[in-house]
Length: 298
Length: 298
Image (tube, rainbow over all chains, first blue to last red; front, side):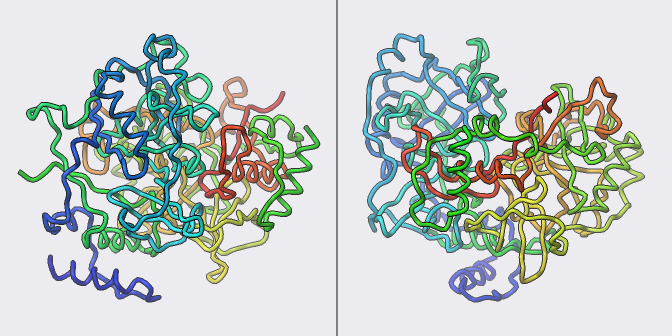
């Protein structure tokens, strides 16, 4: 197993070569199985939301490096029990699900006028880390990965931002850029809506349970809102991972996006060598690269 | 209404300009409302499959220009009642649903060994028509639209092919390239799996009802297959539109992808000017461009 990991690492280093050597096929499962423990990181309990739905659990990792004020606001609302008993109020096919307290709710009314700084993009900073994906992207000058998240960069503007992919989680807003206050959140359940990049604040991504969102009945109202209150899906609770009792706690770890295993994974997904594939395309979109998360080895 | 249509047409003609003029905002609904009848085409009844599910109807348009042998095989199976009483046997999150007769079925057994020519790509031909989308694409040298379908081209190889986007429909196969015989079909329900392009035969796309597929419970078996036969979702019938009695027939028309309205639509989606958008990106991915289909005006 170690032998072809080394071969793949060599191939990754030589990505600029027009005709890379034909490597042995490797599945994602094999790559992950062969990875050293040091290529994984535990999720930070202060940056993870655990949502309990009737159908099961959704785990969302937050990205305070990219949206510190919005992540802090969401965390405070979670700790205040704001989302306990809130609802998925919208499910629009090939786009997003959204959750909030309904408009008529007293706590929602109290939040309605609250504003919060927009964090659509931030200055580039070498401290953030950036593993570049060296393939053309339709939407941004550079795309890649930063501490477990899919990101883009524009060196000319010296800006970087989280990008909208399947599972991305953001803060809903009205027309004013500061109108998203963290009390209404959405998750992407369709083709990456990259047009939203730099137009709305992303705060993280679903790392487990996105399929509980994606199968929710589509709303028949405008933009996929449920027309009748009875159609809404109630959220039992949302807690910060740090506040979940040890016995109930999902113990997850994520593959480090700056690790050798991740580089080999990207390369193997861009150049599928399994027998089924006949024409490896040699490219991959940032939203098609898997970001593995697994139960922590005990 | 006519005024900004003209303004948008002018802007489309000038796409190469770095700073396009700031046009008035226009929604897709407004653009379509203002379109002339000649910008629409009726769907060809011999190239449309109408699937009846317990939850409603899915309409699929086939693309015989891109996969003539496979479309003919699928059409023959449909007319032979092969898919009546077949099942959705697989639902894999962020990937595909798949339908077939179950392996143990007598008709499925009779089909199992049948092979059919792979049609992963075809020679470029000016008769096909091609409306290019002039933005960078991760996977192909050129992307665009051809007679209502999303396609890619490689002028160096003189090849063109249908691309995998949300709603694309293809012919499942095993490892041998000719092992897909049309008796097992799939539809994409997640982020565009473009790695499959030129590796499997696409035959068309869902033009209505994709949301009936995308909410199907995910299978818990390998690759999203349902583990228990009772989990499969039975398909009542699949008919060619030409064989559906007039009274039950979905009378649909599609926006011509070579029309001025479509060009204006692409431009307006690449440069969102609605008040909500603050940073129009000026680009759009081929899989994010909507392909409007509507009930035919009577």
